[in-house]
Image (cartoon, rainbow, N blue to C red; front, top):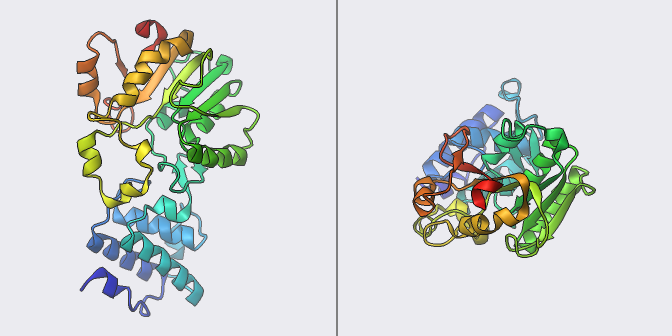
Length: 301
Protein backbone atom coordinates (compact mmCIF):
# COMPACT_ATOMS: atom_id res chain seq x y z
CA UNK A 1 0.00 0.00 0.00
CA UNK A 2 1.50 3.33 -1.00
CA UNK A 3 1.95 6.23 1.38
CA UNK A 4 -0.27 8.47 -0.72
CA UNK A 5 -3.11 5.93 -0.43
CA UNK A 6 -2.62 5.63 3.34
CA UNK A 7 -3.34 9.33 3.70
CA UNK A 8 -6.86 8.73 2.37
CA UNK A 9 -8.35 7.67 5.75
CA UNK A 10 -7.01 8.73 9.14
CA UNK A 11 -10.34 8.62 10.98
CA UNK A 12 -9.13 5.94 13.37
CA UNK A 13 -6.34 8.17 14.67
CA UNK A 14 -7.71 9.71 17.86
CA UNK A 15 -4.90 10.58 20.27
CA UNK A 16 -1.54 12.24 19.93
CA UNK A 17 -0.02 8.81 20.54
CA UNK A 18 -1.94 7.47 17.53
CA UNK A 19 -0.74 10.30 15.32
CA UNK A 20 2.86 9.93 16.48
CA UNK A 21 2.93 6.24 15.64
CA UNK A 22 1.28 6.91 12.30
CA UNK A 23 3.71 9.73 11.42
CA UNK A 24 6.77 7.61 12.25
CA UNK A 25 5.44 4.73 10.15
CA UNK A 26 4.61 7.03 7.25
CA UNK A 27 7.96 8.83 7.33
CA UNK A 28 9.80 5.52 7.42
CA UNK A 29 7.74 4.02 4.60
CA UNK A 30 8.32 7.11 2.47
CA UNK A 31 12.11 6.86 2.96
CA UNK A 32 12.47 10.46 4.08
CA UNK A 33 15.90 11.97 4.63
CA UNK A 34 16.59 13.86 7.85
CA UNK A 35 19.30 16.27 8.97
CA UNK A 36 17.53 19.64 9.06
CA UNK A 37 17.06 19.71 12.81
CA UNK A 38 16.10 16.07 13.43
CA UNK A 39 18.14 12.94 12.79
CA UNK A 40 15.40 10.30 12.59
CA UNK A 41 11.71 9.74 11.86
CA UNK A 42 10.64 9.64 15.51
CA UNK A 43 12.26 12.91 16.53
CA UNK A 44 10.97 14.71 13.47
CA UNK A 45 7.44 13.40 14.01
CA UNK A 46 7.52 14.52 17.64
CA UNK A 47 8.70 17.99 16.63
CA UNK A 48 6.13 18.46 13.88
CA UNK A 49 3.25 17.26 16.04
CA UNK A 50 4.13 19.35 19.09
CA UNK A 51 4.80 22.44 16.98
CA UNK A 52 1.58 22.06 14.99
CA UNK A 53 -0.50 21.62 18.15
CA UNK A 54 1.22 24.58 19.87
CA UNK A 55 2.57 22.39 22.66
CA UNK A 56 5.93 22.79 24.43
CA UNK A 57 8.61 21.21 22.28
CA UNK A 58 10.30 19.59 25.27
CA UNK A 59 7.13 18.06 26.76
CA UNK A 60 5.58 15.01 25.10
CA UNK A 61 4.50 12.40 27.66
CA UNK A 62 1.66 14.31 29.42
CA UNK A 63 -0.11 14.81 26.07
CA UNK A 64 0.28 11.37 24.50
CA UNK A 65 -3.24 10.22 25.34
CA UNK A 66 -4.94 13.55 24.62
CA UNK A 67 -7.49 13.42 21.82
CA UNK A 68 -7.14 15.78 18.89
CA UNK A 69 -9.96 17.97 17.68
CA UNK A 70 -11.14 17.80 14.09
CA UNK A 71 -9.39 21.10 13.13
CA UNK A 72 -6.17 19.91 14.78
CA UNK A 73 -6.30 16.66 12.82
CA UNK A 74 -6.82 18.51 9.55
CA UNK A 75 -3.87 20.86 10.11
CA UNK A 76 -1.58 18.07 11.27
CA UNK A 77 -2.50 15.87 8.32
CA UNK A 78 -1.68 18.70 5.92
CA UNK A 79 1.78 19.11 7.51
CA UNK A 80 2.49 15.39 7.30
CA UNK A 81 1.34 15.19 3.68
CA UNK A 82 3.57 18.08 2.62
CA UNK A 83 6.55 16.56 4.45
CA UNK A 84 6.06 13.18 2.74
CA UNK A 85 4.75 14.06 -0.71
CA UNK A 86 6.90 17.13 -1.39
CA UNK A 87 9.92 16.14 0.75
CA UNK A 88 9.94 19.62 2.31
CA UNK A 89 12.28 19.85 5.34
CA UNK A 90 10.40 20.30 8.59
CA UNK A 91 12.05 23.66 9.24
CA UNK A 92 10.50 25.08 6.07
CA UNK A 93 7.08 23.77 7.08
CA UNK A 94 7.22 25.37 10.52
CA UNK A 95 9.37 28.37 9.47
CA UNK A 96 11.51 27.70 12.52
CA UNK A 97 14.99 26.34 13.18
CA UNK A 98 16.84 25.92 16.46
CA UNK A 99 20.50 26.24 17.43
CA UNK A 100 20.63 25.37 21.11
CA UNK A 101 18.17 27.62 22.92
CA UNK A 102 18.03 30.11 20.03
CA UNK A 103 15.32 29.81 17.42
CA UNK A 104 15.25 31.55 14.05
CA UNK A 105 12.76 32.24 11.30
CA UNK A 106 13.65 30.35 8.12
CA UNK A 107 12.17 29.78 4.69
CA UNK A 108 13.49 28.54 1.37
CA UNK A 109 15.50 31.71 0.80
CA UNK A 110 18.11 30.44 3.28
CA UNK A 111 19.80 27.18 4.16
CA UNK A 112 18.42 25.55 7.31
CA UNK A 113 20.83 26.48 10.17
CA UNK A 114 22.95 23.54 11.33
CA UNK A 115 26.50 24.87 11.76
CA UNK A 116 28.97 23.28 14.15
CA UNK A 117 30.36 26.77 14.71
CA UNK A 118 27.29 27.46 16.84
CA UNK A 119 28.62 25.03 19.44
CA UNK A 120 31.92 26.92 19.59
CA UNK A 121 30.29 30.33 19.85
CA UNK A 122 28.24 29.19 22.82
CA UNK A 123 31.59 28.68 24.59
CA UNK A 124 32.69 32.16 23.45
CA UNK A 125 35.37 30.49 21.30
CA UNK A 126 37.33 29.64 24.44
CA UNK A 127 40.28 29.23 24.76
CA UNK A 128 41.15 30.93 21.46
CA UNK A 129 39.43 34.15 22.52
CA UNK A 130 40.89 35.12 25.87
CA UNK A 131 38.61 38.08 26.64
CA UNK A 132 35.13 37.94 25.14
CA UNK A 133 34.14 41.21 26.78
CA UNK A 134 36.85 43.11 24.91
CA UNK A 135 36.15 41.63 21.49
CA UNK A 136 35.24 44.66 19.40
CA UNK A 137 34.49 43.44 15.88
CA UNK A 138 33.16 40.19 14.42
CA UNK A 139 32.38 39.21 10.84
CA UNK A 140 29.95 36.44 9.94
CA UNK A 141 30.75 35.68 6.30
CA UNK A 142 28.00 33.86 4.34
CA UNK A 143 25.53 34.68 7.10
CA UNK A 144 22.40 33.22 5.51
CA UNK A 145 19.62 33.52 8.09
CA UNK A 146 21.90 35.57 10.37
CA UNK A 147 21.95 32.85 13.02
CA UNK A 148 25.70 32.81 13.70
CA UNK A 149 25.84 36.60 13.73
CA UNK A 150 23.11 36.66 16.35
CA UNK A 151 24.87 34.02 18.44
CA UNK A 152 28.10 36.02 18.15
CA UNK A 153 26.36 39.20 19.30
CA UNK A 154 25.24 37.40 22.44
CA UNK A 155 28.61 35.74 23.05
CA UNK A 156 30.58 38.96 22.58
CA UNK A 157 28.30 41.57 24.15
CA UNK A 158 30.46 44.60 23.33
CA UNK A 159 31.20 43.70 19.73
CA UNK A 160 29.79 45.16 16.53
CA UNK A 161 28.96 42.30 14.18
CA UNK A 162 28.96 42.52 10.39
CA UNK A 163 26.88 39.82 8.69
CA UNK A 164 27.63 39.49 4.97
CA UNK A 165 25.99 37.41 2.27
CA UNK A 166 25.88 37.34 -1.52
CA UNK A 167 22.11 36.71 -1.52
CA UNK A 168 19.77 39.68 -1.18
CA UNK A 169 16.94 37.25 -0.40
CA UNK A 170 18.91 35.62 2.42
CA UNK A 171 19.63 39.02 3.94
CA UNK A 172 15.89 39.73 4.07
CA UNK A 173 15.48 36.65 6.27
CA UNK A 174 18.48 37.71 8.36
CA UNK A 175 16.92 41.15 8.74
CA UNK A 176 13.82 39.60 10.29
CA UNK A 177 15.87 37.50 12.71
CA UNK A 178 18.07 40.41 13.73
CA UNK A 179 14.96 42.49 14.42
CA UNK A 180 13.37 39.65 16.39
CA UNK A 181 16.40 39.61 18.69
CA UNK A 182 16.47 43.43 18.84
CA UNK A 183 20.05 43.60 17.60
CA UNK A 184 19.69 46.17 14.83
CA UNK A 185 22.07 48.51 16.64
CA UNK A 186 24.83 45.88 16.83
CA UNK A 187 24.50 43.76 13.68
CA UNK A 188 25.10 45.28 10.24
CA UNK A 189 23.74 43.33 7.28
CA UNK A 190 25.91 43.68 4.19
CA UNK A 191 25.31 42.36 0.68
CA UNK A 192 28.72 41.15 -0.42
CA UNK A 193 30.24 38.29 -2.41
CA UNK A 194 32.60 37.16 0.35
CA UNK A 195 34.95 40.12 0.98
CA UNK A 196 34.15 42.02 -2.23
CA UNK A 197 32.36 44.90 -0.49
CA UNK A 198 34.29 44.84 2.77
CA UNK A 199 37.31 46.83 1.62
CA UNK A 200 39.18 48.44 4.50
CA UNK A 201 37.25 46.56 7.21
CA UNK A 202 39.11 44.50 9.82
CA UNK A 203 37.81 42.18 12.51
CA UNK A 204 38.97 40.50 15.70
CA UNK A 205 37.06 37.37 14.67
CA UNK A 206 35.90 36.14 11.28
CA UNK A 207 33.54 33.16 11.30
CA UNK A 208 32.20 31.53 8.16
CA UNK A 209 30.02 28.59 7.24
CA UNK A 210 30.42 28.94 3.46
CA UNK A 211 29.15 26.61 0.72
CA UNK A 212 31.35 23.52 0.81
CA UNK A 213 29.56 20.59 -0.88
CA UNK A 214 31.57 19.11 -3.77
CA UNK A 215 30.01 18.68 -7.20
CA UNK A 216 29.62 14.91 -6.96
CA UNK A 217 27.78 15.21 -3.64
CA UNK A 218 25.57 18.03 -4.92
CA UNK A 219 24.46 15.79 -7.78
CA UNK A 220 23.51 13.06 -5.30
CA UNK A 221 21.69 15.21 -2.73
CA UNK A 222 18.37 13.81 -1.44
CA UNK A 223 15.18 15.66 -2.37
CA UNK A 224 14.98 17.47 0.97
CA UNK A 225 18.23 19.32 0.29
CA UNK A 226 17.08 20.45 -3.13
CA UNK A 227 14.64 22.82 -1.42
CA UNK A 228 17.63 24.79 -0.11
CA UNK A 229 19.29 27.58 -2.12
CA UNK A 230 21.84 26.05 -4.48
CA UNK A 231 24.24 28.95 -3.81
CA UNK A 232 24.39 27.92 -0.15
CA UNK A 233 25.44 24.34 -0.87
CA UNK A 234 27.85 23.72 -3.76
CA UNK A 235 31.27 25.31 -4.15
CA UNK A 236 33.03 23.98 -7.22
CA UNK A 237 34.31 20.55 -8.14
CA UNK A 238 35.92 19.81 -4.77
CA UNK A 239 33.71 22.02 -2.59
CA UNK A 240 36.54 24.38 -1.70
CA UNK A 241 36.10 27.32 -4.09
CA UNK A 242 34.66 29.64 -1.44
CA UNK A 243 37.15 28.49 1.19
CA UNK A 244 40.08 29.21 -1.15
CA UNK A 245 38.89 32.78 -1.63
CA UNK A 246 38.44 33.21 2.11
CA UNK A 247 41.97 32.00 2.79
CA UNK A 248 43.32 34.27 0.05
CA UNK A 249 41.82 37.44 1.51
CA UNK A 250 41.23 36.86 5.21
CA UNK A 251 44.55 38.30 6.43
CA UNK A 252 43.65 41.70 4.98
CA UNK A 253 40.48 41.72 7.08
CA UNK A 254 41.84 40.51 10.42
CA UNK A 255 43.23 42.68 13.18
CA UNK A 256 46.84 41.85 14.21
CA UNK A 257 45.70 39.21 16.72
CA UNK A 258 42.57 38.23 14.83
CA UNK A 259 41.38 34.68 14.17
CA UNK A 260 39.56 32.99 11.29
CA UNK A 261 37.14 30.10 11.91
CA UNK A 262 35.65 28.24 8.93
CA UNK A 263 33.42 25.18 8.59
CA UNK A 264 34.23 22.95 5.60
CA UNK A 265 32.16 19.77 5.94
CA UNK A 266 34.00 16.58 4.98
CA UNK A 267 36.81 18.36 3.11
CA UNK A 268 39.63 18.25 5.67
CA UNK A 269 41.88 15.90 3.66
CA UNK A 270 41.41 17.87 0.45
CA UNK A 271 42.06 21.17 2.20
CA UNK A 272 45.23 20.01 3.94
CA UNK A 273 46.50 18.58 0.67
CA UNK A 274 45.86 21.91 -1.07
CA UNK A 275 47.51 23.98 1.70
CA UNK A 276 50.24 21.79 3.20
CA UNK A 277 52.05 24.77 4.73
CA UNK A 278 49.09 26.24 6.62
CA UNK A 279 49.05 25.27 10.33
CA UNK A 280 45.35 24.48 10.61
CA UNK A 281 43.97 24.01 14.11
CA UNK A 282 41.01 21.60 13.92
CA UNK A 283 38.41 22.37 16.55
CA UNK A 284 36.50 19.74 18.49
CA UNK A 285 32.74 19.78 17.89
CA UNK A 286 30.04 17.20 18.55
CA UNK A 287 30.81 15.37 15.29
CA UNK A 288 34.60 15.27 15.78
CA UNK A 289 37.62 17.34 14.81
CA UNK A 290 37.41 17.27 11.02
CA UNK A 291 34.84 19.93 10.21
CA UNK A 292 35.93 23.35 11.53
CA UNK A 293 39.39 24.90 11.35
CA UNK A 294 41.00 27.92 13.00
CA UNK A 295 43.85 30.06 11.74
CA UNK A 296 45.48 33.14 13.25
CA UNK A 297 46.19 36.18 11.12
CA UNK A 298 49.91 35.52 11.33
CA UNK A 299 49.33 32.05 9.85
CA UNK A 300 47.81 33.65 6.76
CA UNK A 301 50.21 36.48 6.07
